[in-house]
Each structure stands twice: as structure tokens, then as C-alpha cells.
Image 1: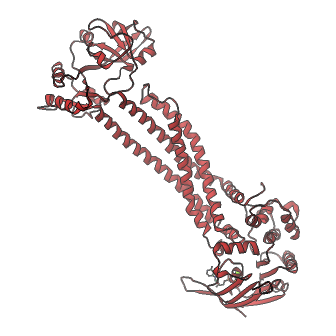
Image 2: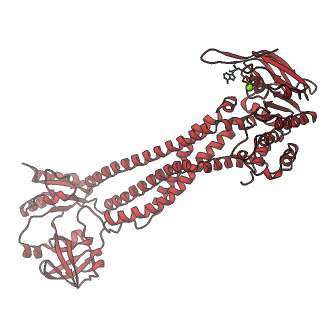
Image 3: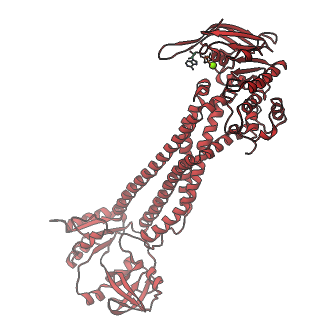
Amino acid sequence: MNEEGPIIRFTGVTKVYPLPAGDVVALDHVSLDVMPGEFLAIMGPSGSGKSTLLNLMGCLDTPTSGTLFIKGKDVGTLSDDELTRLRRDHIGFIFQQFNLIPLLNVIENVEFPRILKEREGGCTERCLEVLAAVGLEEELFSHTPAELSGGQQQRVAIARALINDPEILLADEPTGNLDTKTGTGIMELLDEMNRRGRTVIMVTHDQNVAAYARRRITIVDGRIA
Amino acid sequence: MKEVRTAQRIFLVFAVRNLRRHWVRSGLAALGIIIGVLAIASLGILGNNLIILFSGLVADVSDTVVVTPHLAAASGDPFDPRSALATGITERDADRIAHAVGANPSIPLIQTAEALKKGRESGYIPVIVLHASDMPLLLSVAEGSFPPGSGRGVLIGARLAHELDIRAGSRISLAGEDVRVVGVLEERGLAIDINPDYAVVVTHDWYTDLHGAEDYDRVVIKVADLEEIPAVKAAVKDQMNRRKEVVDVQDSREILEMYYQTYDAISIFLLGIGGVALLVSSVSILNVMIISVTQRTQEIGVMRSIGALRREILLMFLYEALILGIAGSLIGGVLSVVAGYAITASVAETIFAGYGTAPTSLDAAGMREILTGIGFGIGTSLLAGVYPAWKAAHLDPIEALRYE
Ligand SMILES: Nc1ncnc2c1ncn2[C@@H]1O[C@H](COP(=O)(O)OP(=O)(O)OP(=O)(O)O)[C@@H](O)[C@H]1O
Ligand SMILES: [Mg+2]
């Protein structure tokens, strides 16, 4: 697969969670291509498999069967370290719960993935650049996550997702914990990242939020409807 | 908060901040290590001092056989106070012993105590009663000479002489009698036959003049040829214990053996205590680390999802255990130095009773014990951290993220 091919390709991917009470089929033979630069919204009822799909895209998990290519690599064949490096260098995660690291301040949180990748960091130009891009006020840079509002935390989280300049941004209900106005700000930010060429894939329940995406798919019972 | 720079540093920073955030918990875990290190180091120092005591005993008495009156309850230990309860060895028995051992000199003696007065100082001191002719066989004079067979001349132990500022030629009052110190003995150290360093040695004639004839407390036999020791012992037993046990016969090796056995038992006991202390401290570290991993499960999930490798998570938690271990061990080490001085001083005072071989300060061996304690402290902390750290590193990122 070359540069023009899909950046993410699912072919007949099934994900089964084995539970004592019986196996849960979270994804059932899903085939899906995501092209570079797309803005995709994944919708569907609760428990339908949206997060499972996103986690597979984010190399947090591997398919039970079927094949999944991320940037041309079959993730089923990769080691844990290789999957981790793929996440670190090419994928940015944005969570519903923001998930900043409480022991680190804003700058340190944003720099963290960069330190993991480059083995060094600090308050770099790149760090200031992404913090400026998400529109976070400078007075907040030395604050800890507990001292920030939800919207501010999500901006820091987006800055963190952007720091290593990933091709793919994955967001699981990024506005789920925010009020409408704050959520709109965050969506405009993701929209801008997409217009700058990043592939953005987002899970949402909200039609208004989904409207930002250029393509929408709906999952029902582990299948694309 | 300080700026974070390199990747290795950031995990160290995580560890430090996490420990600081839960400082009470961390402090208690470190306390466990402190106690463990302290226990190992102090017990080690105590053991060392005992070794020094015994090696002092080995030195100069390997040619000695000691005959003491038999006492059913006696342990055979010449230092055992119960030995004093035993009946004595009669003049006739002493002669039979001398006869039995042939050419090897046999030296009967009485150990007692008398009131000593010198100037304004007075008190009871140990007195060893020897035949004047036997004195050169057991003792050496540093200053002055041995007393003649009769008369009022006595010898004085080196330490006692030093303490009371007594010289050859001084006059002292012993048992109310005015006597002349004819010689000061060379310092002899702790031994199993007699311990004259803090004693006065008087002639048998002088003593019997004063108190009448008395039984002997022991007979010391000097065996010229070490190979002959078993034969000498057998001869004495043969002569004396034919019908019933009249005397106990022991050679220095046997007596030392007994001490070594005691010493071994003590060291195993001390080692056991140290081991238990360390076990407890490592369990406390393990406990704290497991709590830490559980509490931070979600955080671990986040770190893994944004690109932290398994080994980096492992490192972060190992740092935590290591910091606890190093901090606890170093504090424990410092306290051990203090404890070491105290132990050494008290051993010097009580067990050695001022004898020359006593260590007076914390020596290299003591420092080695402390370093061993520190090493064990750090080692066990690290070891206790391995399982929780491994567990943290192998958490499933998704499961960890979902953890509430
Ligand atoms: N780790 C897991 N272990 C067991 N079952 C799981 C696990 N993760 C998800 N599931 C199950 O897989 C199915 C899909 O879950 P998923 O989280 O993908 O749904 P979702 O569409 O994201 O739901 P929601 O909108 O509520 O977030 C559900 O039935 C869920 O119970
Ligand atoms: Mg979900």
C-alpha cells in the first residue's frame, strides 16, 4: 500500500471479548477504508462497538480475526513495542474523560509524548506552538489538570495529541463531558486540524457534533449499518 | 514544579512526585526498610564483637587442660557461676592429678575475692591463689619480680595496677593485711584458665597463713605437646573418676567449641531476627507498590495509549521502589552507625569487662555490616518492587483506561 492508499483498512475484522458468561462479539466482520485527510464520524447506539472500533484503529488492541492495516502495516503481526511506537509516533488520542496525567502540569502533559519519542523535551517551541494552536492561555501553563476547567483540560489533551505531529487523530466522544458552547470550540479545533491535512476519526452520539465530519458511519450490533 | 527534560528523568520525576503525594504511606514503607537495615547492621556488629571475643580466647590457651570439681548441675563452663558452688579439689586430689599427668606441670589454684585498700580507694577484687613455684608457669611479670615462697609479696594484674596507679614496690592493704606489691603482671587478655588482669595474685603460703588450708577451685595443666592432650585428659579421668565423677576435665579446644556452638546459635538467632525484619519491610514495600499500581491503573492506561512502552512503565515503578529502598536504607545506615557505636561500647563494657581485645570504636568490619544492611535494604526493596512493576507494565491498555 502506498501513500495514496487508505491510511486505515479493516477487512473482515471481528473482535470477540471472551467472558465467562459467554463471548461478546463487539465487532462482526467489519470492512472499512479510511483515506488520508478524511474526517470520519462513527455513530451508533450504546454498546454497538464504536469504542472497540476506535481502539483497534488506535492500535490499543488487535483483531480477533480479519486483518487491520494502519499506515500499511498489518497490526496483527506487530509486537507490543511496535504497536506502542505506532501509537506514539503516528496517532493522537483524545478521550471523553480528557485523561491528563495528574502528576504533571500543562507543559509537562503536552510534552510527555514528545519526551517518549525524542527522549528529550522541556518547554520547547513545538510545545508552545501546539498550546497556541489550541488557544490555551499562558497563565495556565504551569497549572496541574485539577486546576483547569473541562474545556481547558480538553484543549491541553488535544495539544498533547498533536505534539508528535501524528497523521491520525482519534477522539472518543471528545465533547461528551463538555457543555455545548465549549464543545463547539473543541469541534472547531478538530475541524481545523483536519483542514490542515490530518485524518480525524471521532466517535459521537451527538448529531450536531457529527455534522462537522465529512463522512459519517453508523454501527449497530458490531456491524456498519 | 521543575521542568521535565529527558525520558529517563520523566519517569524518575513521576516516581518522586507520586511518593511525595502519598508521603505518609511512603514514609511508613521507608520506616520498614529503616528498621530492617538497622536490625541487620546492628546484629552484624554485635556478632562481629562476639567473634573478636572468641578469637581472643583461641589465641594463647590451646595448650591448657582445666580440671574442675564435678557438679551434677554444672555446665562445664569455667565462667559459669554455678561452678563456684561445687566442692573443691583437695590437696590429695591435686597430688593425684599431678601424679597422673607426669611431666606436664599441673597447677592447683584457688579463686577468691578479698577487700583491697589503697590510699582512700577500697573495694573487693578477685584474688588468685597460686603456689609461688607455679607462678612463672602461668604468668609473666612486666615490672618487678615474682614473690618468694613466703612473705607478704603479691603480684598485681596489669589493668588493676593501671587503674589504681600501683607499681612494683607499692604497699596495699589486702584482707586487712599490709602487703607489698613485688611485681606488676603483663597484660594477659581474656582466657579460660585464669584472668589475672583485674586481680591480685597471692602465694598459697600467705593465703593459708591467713585462712587456713582450703580446697582448690581448679587445677590447670599445661601440656607441652598438643598431641598429648587426649592422653593427659584420659589419665586424669582414669585417676580421679574411677568410682564416681569427682572432677570435670576439659581442654581449651572443647571449651572453645562450646563457645562457638553458643556463638553459632546466637548468630542464627540474630540472622533470623534480621531476616524477619527484612521480610516485614519488603512486604510493606510490596503493599505500598501494589496500592500505587492499583490507584494509578487509569493513568497507566493513558500513558500506554499515548506511547509509553511496557519497560518504561516498569522503570517508573521500579524507581519508586528503589527510591523508597535507598532513602530507607541510607537513613537506616546512618542510624546503624549510631547504634553500632552504642553496641560496641556496651559490649566493650559488659562482655569484655575492659579486656584489651575489646573493640573501642566502629571498625571496618562494623562498617561492612552496615553496608551489608544497606545493600540488603535496597536489594529487597527493589525485589519487592519487581512484581507490582511487572504487573503495571503488563496491564492491558484498554482495561486500564476503563478502570475506575
Ligand atoms: N474489555 C471488554 N471486555 C468485555 N466486553 C467488552 C469490553 N469492551 C467492550 N465490551 C463489550 O463490547 C461491546 C461493544 O462495546 P463498546 O465499548 O465498543 O461500545 P460503544 O459503542 O463504545 O458504547 P458506548 O456508546 O456506550 O460507549 C459491548 O457489549 C461491551 O459490553
Ligand atoms: Mg464507547
